[in-house]
Length: 386
Image (cartoon, rainbow, N blue to C red; front, side, top):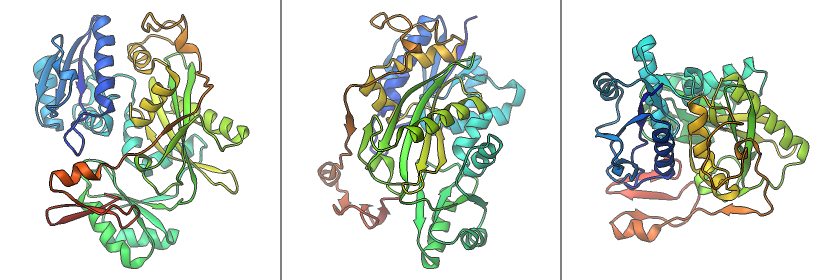
């Protein structure tokens, strides 16, 4: 049966340019069109090259739930894809499902619980507890007083994070009472629901990501693991990342692999899921810190490193194909989708801080990197945690 599918764009990045999500969108559109489905793309990003295709309907508008509901009604949308639009698409898809209820288009490959867990650490913790998997200690707070209560319960340091943030997620590491009020107010103001999660800090743990795929028959494949060379506390985009994982003993690696499969199964994800872990370097115990059920920089790195046709595979899985039958480009061997990639090389991703480009357009910068590094737009300063 042919579907009329809405693809929610991820908007432009902070510098007004396309992201790795746009490249993934292009491949997904190609795969879905080849299967006979009609595509409607909604985005507010004029720089995306997916929207230049002549075989899709493109609507450029602000990415809000009311705007998307209007598009869904007017265009007769029967399904939505959120896995190539980043956190923005996941958040909006969840809002649409909650607004429209049974009348909402199906979200291909995702369930409402995984979308909620992506945005709400407290909800993620509750679900992981039911799956008997370890999670970070966290409390939900709706005002500064509740933030202080949580900090007293956990003891410092703590991390304050916005729930359903406007723009990108911020994580504010707070060392003492003097810093807490300002961090709480900043995070609360960046939240669409005016709520924050207060987490017990795990700074100093190793940060590991596992990217897996799962089909409707519960067949699971590990695409790969990525290790950040900096410990938890440094944003993954600012850290040197390496694959395959270099420093974990194999028993610990296998624990994380199995845990990632358990999460995908527990949330009934069909398609792509990235599970991010923090591993205590002393005890080798771990906690799950985040779920990313969409294509991001980690997924892009693993595609480049392994050659696995991840986006064509997830396009097929979302449409109900299984890993042994999914159609991938003809340049790949038969049953490629079923084979876990193995690597005989190491791939390293280095962050690039384009201070020269920023300064050329009048943005003042401090080049020393750390918790005091900052960028200024006019009279406003933004630290590295913004």
